[in-house]
Length: 399
Image (cartoon, rainbow, N blue to C red):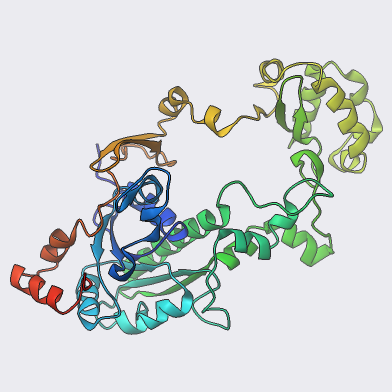
C-alpha cells in the first residue's frame, strides 16, 4: 500500500466547532499531520462538551470532526504561547485558523506575522464574514449564513416559511472550500518557496453555491422561487413523487430519461404530446405533466418504482438517515470508519468519501485534550526543562 497522499504535510489548526474542523478532518484522513491548537481558557474546543455521547472533555460530536488529529493547549494571548506557535510554524506547511476574522488578525495568524519565520507558510483564515472589512468582528454560525445568504428562502414548499437544511451545509461547504484553498496555496508555495494569506468566509462560499441561480438572476433577472415537491426550477420531471407507501426521487436530466420514464410507466400518449416534447415545453407545462405522473406514482409502493426504473431512469427511494446508514451498505461502499476511543469506547461513523487507488485511510480517534503536548513539543526541539519553563510562563494556561 502506498503512503498516504498527504503524508508529510503539517497543518497547525487553530479551529473550533464544525466548519474549520470539517475541512481538516478530510486532510487528516488523507494523511496530513493536523495539530489542533486549543484554547486553555475555554477548556479547549467547545464542541468537546456537546451531547449526546459526552464524557469529560470528550464527545462524539468532537470526535466526528477531529479523528486522526493531534491536540495541544496553547494560550495565544500569552507571549509564551506565541513563542511555541512560532516554533511550530517553522516546520509547518500551513496555519489554518477558524475564528472570528478580527480575532485571527489579533492573534497574528497572518502571513505578515508568520512569513518572516517561515517564508513558505500558508495562512488560511476561515471566518463567517472575512478577515477584513466592516463585518470581520461579527460571529457567525451555519443557520445565520443559510438565512442571510438566501439559502433558506429557496428551501421548503411555496407558501411555507423559509427552511434551513437539516444538515450544517454552510459550515461543511466553508470547511471544504478552505481545505481546497489550503492545498492550492501549499502546492504553489512548494513551487515558489513563498506562502501567502488565504481568506475564506462562510458567507462568500454560501453566495458562490447559488451558482446557476445567481447567473439567472444577475444576467436575466430570473428570481429565485421555491418549487413544490423538492423540484428543480426548470427541469421537469426532476423532483420527489409520493408513492403508495412513501416517496421516490426522479431526475430526468436528459431527454432520453424522460422517454425511458414514460415507456416504463406505459404512458405512450405523453411521447406524442407537444406540451411535453422538450425541456422548455415541459417547463412551461409543468403542472399538467406532474399531475399525470403523480397520479401514476401514487398507485404503487416505492420499491415497485425503484425496481421498474433502476437502470433506465435516475431513480432513488426517499429514505431516512437511519436507513441510509445501514452498516452492510456502508461496508460495501467502503464508507465505514470504526475505532476505539479511550473515553468513548467503540466509535462507528462514516469515513472518507474519497477513493484513491493504492490508498486506504487508517482511522484513529480524535485527540484527548492536550494529549499530544509532549510529543509535539519534543518534535519541535524542546527539552523537558524548556517545556516546564513554558508552562510556568502560562503557555498552556494557568489551570
